[in-house]
Length: 263
Image 1 (cartoon, helix red, strand yellow):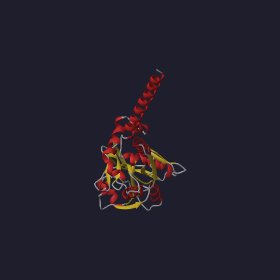
Image 2 (image 1 turned 180 degrees about the vertical axis):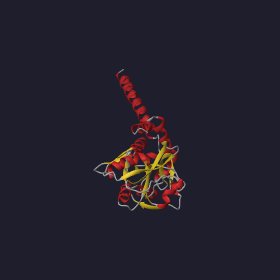
Image 3 (image 1 turned 90 degrees about the horizontal axis):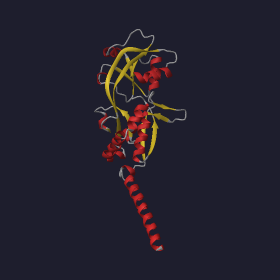
Image 4 (image 1 turned 90 degrees about the vertical axis):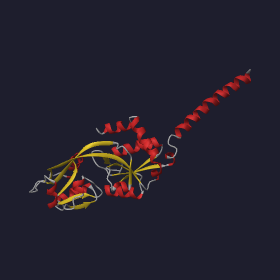
């Protein structure tokens, strides 16, 4: 009788352990190939109001939150690299990082990246022109740019009519701060920037109110994509990566992140 009871207890423990192991196995095999990726590498340029870098060089914000959610879903670690935009793109092109988040899709970029569909966000983006407050002219049309030196951040795209106009003299700079600095010292006459971002940067880089918003504005329908480097190990697992993104959407996790930034 005692032997029977002991045997029954052992069998019950074995049954529960077996179920536990089965559940674990199912959980761990949700993304079997992705699980082999030890880290997810994100390149991000700190760009207020959606991302910031603190005094210790730690980047926080929208792109980091989305990447962290992806990494968590994949069961891997997130590695974040802060860099000027052009450098971020170059690192991704070379496979030094895996993804860039918030990239707009162009035919040129599709040669080097795979864009996960659909975009994680679609919105109407307002782009404005900025010039010195003491400028004797007001930039109000695309044609006005053709008589000016226009500052452009390397790697940035704005809208096709501007990007593809060969008559516009573009002076390329490495980062946002350089755009403001060059405008303030007169090395460029004007630059374009999303209005919501410029409002943050004006507070930081234009403490003497020497820069004004010109009359010119452009509204574009823009999708924000997760772009995967074609030289990343993730490129072999795009179907699974799409599933990971789909799960973030279906569970509401992605919506929660976007709501945090009022998007």
